[in-house]
Image 1 (spheres, rainbow, N blue to C red):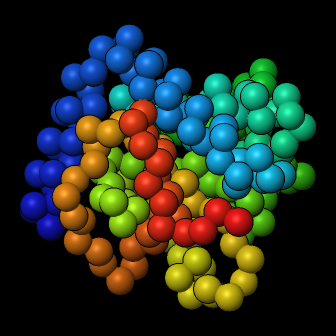
Image 2 (cartoon, rainbow, N blue to C red):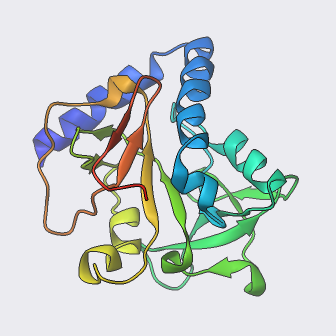
Length: 199
């Protein structure tokens, strides 16, 4: 566990060292890969996140998806079940409020909520990844718990989980725990890594 804490610190430091110009160029290249991905083109319900702390920010892609009449969602902290995420409908111009971690999220309203399993495509933030699309998050376990059904019900229709990262966040190999939810693919500014067929 201490090794993972050290790795998280190192990867975060690398990410934060990038200039705003490097960040913008990396985001443009990585989002272009997602834009061309068959899962993005076919998806009707897409979830992303509001990039903070040096993360590549998928919001420009969500804005484009909304113009394409796709339904877009952002994660919010579940108010009744700690450690889980809700997904709330978001449209360009919607007001956002900061949660307890300082991350902007939409205000939940009954009709705007969607269960994680009903999403078609989820763009997932991460700190590190390997070429097998194993993911190292911030350590809170929110995505692993919210998408645990992916491991349990492999035969049912489920969202395609696509990580978004700088190429510099790739590591040789990540140790996987039984509760970890692997990604189907990871898009970076240099490459698209995929372990799941896209058709």
